[in-house]
Image (cartoon, rainbow, N blue to C red; front, side, top):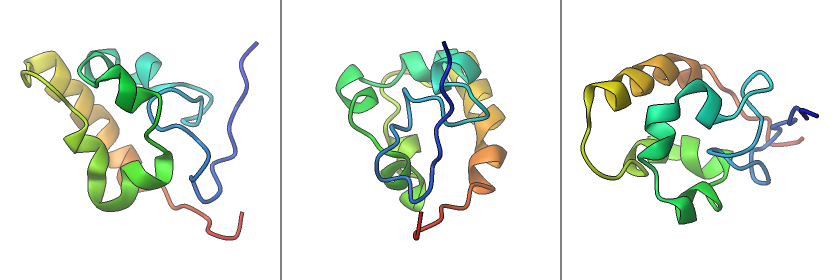
Length: 88
């Protein structure tokens, strides 16, 4: 059963592993990029942290292969349009 996340201020939603992007996880939307992120980061990075100064991009570890870069471009525009709601 899939559960959507209400992002709100983004402090309790995990950026890499929760279903916060139209009911999908980052692994489903950008699998190559997801594989390039260390598991300890996957389990701890919140949406609020990741979107602050695009910290999510610094989570990428290893070679920036063409598939990883394609996934980055795929989500870049979407992430720029995400507006967190501090009061929620």
